[in-house]
Length: 173
Image 1 (cartoon, rainbow, N blue to C red):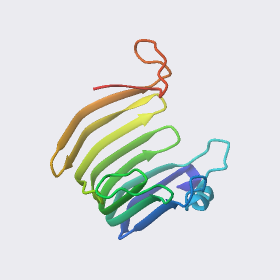
Image 2: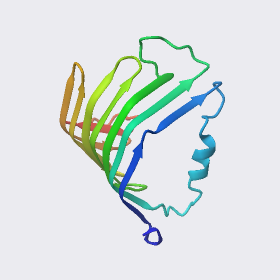
Image 3: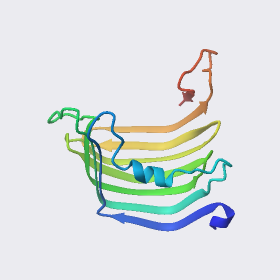
Image 4: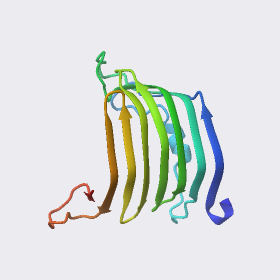
């Protein structure tokens, strides 16, 4: 219960969603900044609720991101103009808290306007403040498949040789 610091949802579905995020000028805020601000936690005590979602399903989703001040390039992927369609996803969020994560992406597929077709992405991921694991990652497109059975990572200020690690993440397969 929320009084116990936990939000537990058995089943959530998002059908035919259409999201459009954009910035008109470089110094502008993202068009949904007011929404982000509304859900930003002002609680400085660190008492954020744990979130658990047994099954989240999304079907027939569309998402678009545009930086209108950047030029578009036809036929090429552009980080400034992303247009996703046919988004389908099934995910289990076993735990999502301030310092721990347990997520199983059972299926994600989508198309991007440049022609990319992600047929399937699957993985299980768990982490805490010190590191985590990524297991059973399988990614399939129309022409390629990538499988990564297991990755463990540690979050540290130095890598295994003692050198400074600016991103703070080391990984081993």
